[in-house]
Image (cartoon, rainbow, N blue to C red; front, side, top):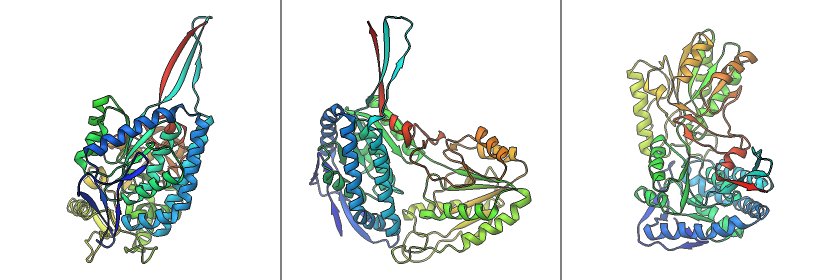
Length: 474
């Protein structure tokens, strides 16, 4: 069994107490590791180390920070097999998928390294001929990064890479479900020779997260998580008037027009719903199908989903893996039962499997209504409700009648329909004839309760900066 200490000021540090967090393989229920939990003293030490390191880091030419990120990316590539093995055990992913996630994390790190010569300010015209107005971009300072369980390597690097290139230092709190891979990233930080204190990694119980986020030196908190977690972070931000950047819940609608390539749409939606057991913020969560093709599309989708088997991906990588926890599985099953009781038709799945692991079968529900909980609330699992619609206006009305607005999808061969949805959908992203993939040169940002701020691309990097206006007489 693996054990890990917290990473503070460039070193792995012994715990203040014997407390720790057991890490459970969700496919087998076995304990595969234990991580030390930070106490109040270590939280203060980590934030203070980050504050000291940040002052020097911010004064470096940005090209030197970029070189540090490139070294980090190279170190992650070298460690990708080790990162992948650990991540696979604690997440239920296949080793191949987990290694690929590490490699993809190295890619986004290199992408942000390229901003070294491209972080720009502005020259703004003044009303006076003897005056120049400059708008400069400066780092925030110390950034707390709160990482989810579902893509814990990629999301960690998605946050720390833009934070570092902008001149910040970070304190990372990984998910208590998948913390082990974060310490492998900490070893890559050591391998890359980044300054001590620039990246710190601490596991902790939930009640200590508030102490971390409200330390006086913390200038920004970035979270990928639930709406409830986002509300907690907004409360934490009040202490220092810290800047929040929140990617929260999602309920991606997919609109299937009558002229769509139904085979292509069914294949892609089935893959979206079963990748990592549907535990993706942008996985398809509700499907609106035009009346004329509803029955044909439902049959296609059912056939594709029925072919998916649950199982331990360490044994068979072609299987769909487990949910993160037994409590998550129980909550999802309860939603399915309520949907059926409320009038939905169970086409597929909808039962609790026997045996070890947090497995839940792919579940397809037809005859759903817009007012059902299964349509209104995020599922974050392999459950898919299907609804009918008549006109595209009807589909848009239902897609927009929602608390979330992260991502959205339309399948159509009519560019007019695609553009109509593009101009009216209430979401931060629209994917046309494909399912979401979060290109890291784009901007991943939600509307409504799906978040504040965003990740990726130029705009995601600029989230980690603040401005200074300089007005100069001459």
